[in-house]
Length: 91
Image 1 (cartoon, rainbow, N blue to C red):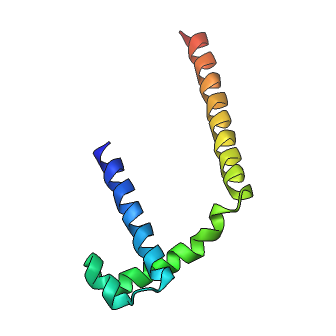
Image 2: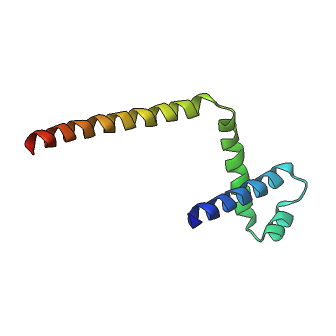
Image 3: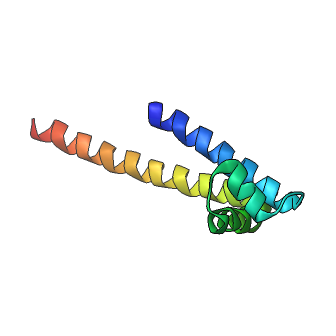
């Protein structure tokens, strides 16, 4: 639970820093000293943010992932039902 809170806080910080870098209102060195981070790390977060930002508007991809996950769960349920039936017959 504590780890999830930390992860959310860090994710927000990463996004905030990346957005600041994208705005280019401050130089990388200014952002680096403001957030006490390496300029190369800020550049990396900016690049990742820009690369992954298109996925926010891609509604098809999350559905596909959700469908794949649902399919895996149904397969698992089927296997478990077969195992239960087998064990009921043996006991």
